Length: 71
Image (cartoon, rainbow, N blue to C red; front, side):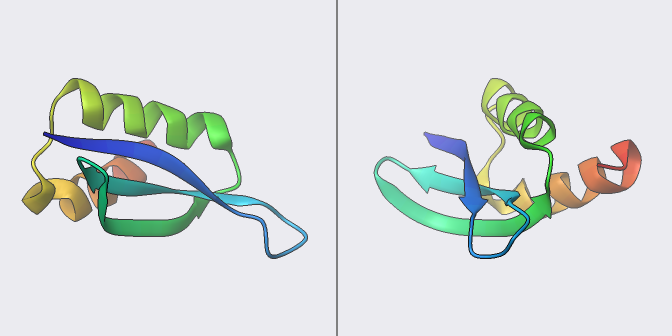
């Protein structure tokens, strides 16, 4: 079953958060640097996990979330 976690990029002066897709212990895909607000990305990850979003829909759902909810 896929699961989604928040990932951080701490390489710049501003921390930015993204989201990673895992299947078991294997990282399948990461979309980095979506927002400087960790809580927004935590909400997105929680939604993806709660709805058990299939990996093939990951990018589309994230894009829709960013567009519709304007992180």
